[in-house]
Image (tube, rainbow, N blue to C red; front, top):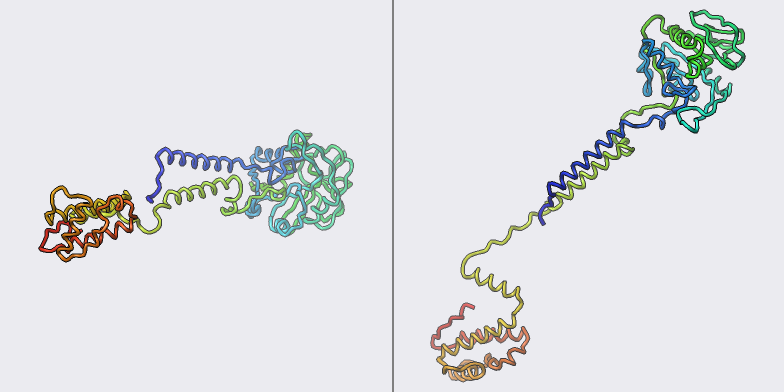
Length: 411
């Protein structure tokens, strides 16, 4: 069996299909959704919901600050001079990874959570319901950064006590404050601290108790946009530092590349399908070439023996063995009659009887001639009997005396 080949049209169709699958995998890779990783309606810099920080992020970038999002190794993005912004963590900061951030970054802005929200029914990137978070949940976030401190909620004051230059924030409803902590108040009221500072050597941590002034629903109210810029400026010390929004605390995380893992996930599993299909097609096209080499076709030899051998092979293939043996017997009898000068016109049973008498007269056994003259009897013999009779007749013919010509001796 020879190697399998494909027509040019088939190869072109296969190549076009593989190219289309590869292009589709690249397109779908670029369209990977973020909602599957973090909450599109939550309090993060990707969210345009009421509690999101997208407006705060855009405000800083529009004001000339270098603001970036970090979804993998945020401390590397912060470096030695950047500012780490932990805005309303979705969970506690008690893990080793988050505690390492709090103890490593030299500048930190921690914004405490305030709301528990649910997605809207009409749009999944908007909130449908919001209610105040449990004070215990807020205190768990605060306790990871400072010692002690309670969360209180009260009516907004008529004025704030400030030790930094900052605009007054506007908060509708109850304002969330910190009371009884080791924070140094930067902006406060008689009921507690709105913006506090914790210094540990060269490390500074600012804690904003109420996130309403920087969230999408509140940043456009009153002087909240100026207030947000002033809070950030308090951490920059007049230097152009990078502001890093840590989005790993909201569930947005880019895993390190792992090709073997990605190949089993959509849409890169399309690439795996292409690889398997290409290998299968390669094996299919080449499987006929495996194994021992095929024998070359037999060369057609020249000469008398080759001609006789080929003729015998064709006769054997045709299957008329009985007719050929009977024809051989008749030809041998005719030849023997000519050799012994039998009377003209003898044939069949008469010729066989004459040859039998001539054979006995010369002392040759005439048994091989018995029954050969009867065509009906000869035709009824099976193949084995005909072959035995032909062989016996052949030997009888060779025993004729007086040097009779033997034209069939070589058969």
